[in-house]
Image (cartoon, rainbow, N blue to C red; front, top):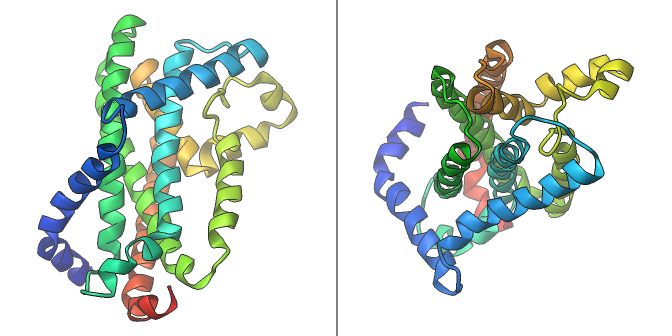
Length: 265
């Protein structure tokens, strides 16, 4: 832990500058530029809202915003974990020339995605005004929820970084598993309000909401922002603790084996 903190201080300049540089590179060759980060979540929200509302007949208050929050929460976790699998290949040009602790790349990627999700939440603020969503003190509770999301995303990304070096097909496996978790996380439907699930599979409802950390955080954010309710702090606390333990594992694996990453990747 002491080495981890020391490296954060040592590479803080790179951590600040790299995400901004990558963002500028991403938009340099596109027509929409920064506008796309506003349009992308809106377009996906409209798509899933249409499918869930008109095809699956979902009835949830502030449903477009419900979907919007779900998509942004999921996209942050999903992109971080997927990027972790191929991270050593992506940064091969840097790591072959100079030493940088590999979890620094994880933090760069997570900061990059955090900037994008922050832009998306500016859109959410406008939508809340349009839909006349009441704002209460519960919105402050979003802060520890975002921290928990960051923790579990760092854990997933750093562990995937390590195993992605040694398992060539891991990217395909992770893509399939994440797609399954996506549909189980209630991104475009309410797990809690699903009467059929509650009646036929009550334990499955609890498992989907509590044992899935992304769904747990997602449900908490929706409660705080849209429904003026507190999240389930018991389960949020459990996942924050589990996430920290997995973060420690990921950092340990990287410290122990990173000398061999360049040769294999």
